[in-house]
Length: 238
Image 1: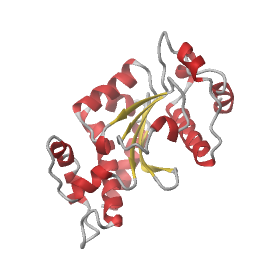
Image 2: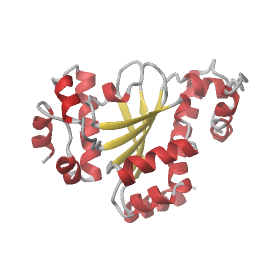
Image 3: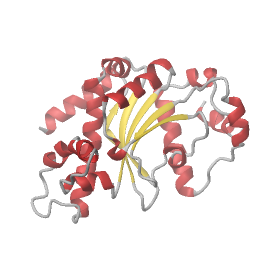
Image 4: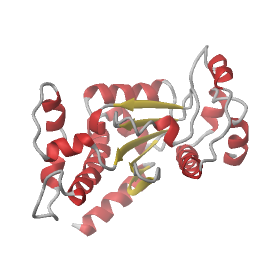
């Protein structure tokens, strides 16, 4: 079904029937294939004006991507998607807030999206700012939401600032994992949909040097059984 769907992507965008036919696993697979095309510079040819016409009466995106506002991290480009294919929720540091949760609830519960990706990225300015305890107007409050991830990183003992790339990347990884957890904990609507297998969620990290999206498989949840296995593995690790 996925192969056939990709062929159709050259001609038209998603509609209600094609969105409904996708499972959460299908949506994730399509995103992975899209990033592979992006990295290989083999993006699908799209008639964007035709897609404008096709989506004028409605939208049926397959996924919702929460990502940073960084100019290098456009989700539509990174995953090689067209108009109407994905919801893109962007703000500095991909910080989870009530507004983000509300947007995700709309995307999944109302508009029918099948998958959520929380996308962090390398060399993130917001993460660096949190590491350095930057204070600047309204930005201060946003960076404070990342601060718990800075303190949660315990493997690096020295040079815990933005001058240390390894520290920045470690904090980014933790922040992305914690953001996935925050969505599950702070939205009962999304949590219920995820545990029922209606939608899925995963964290991922985008490399601004290579264009590759590395999916964090240990954050993947689609259904209650998968959620149970994930937490059993965490308990063993602890």
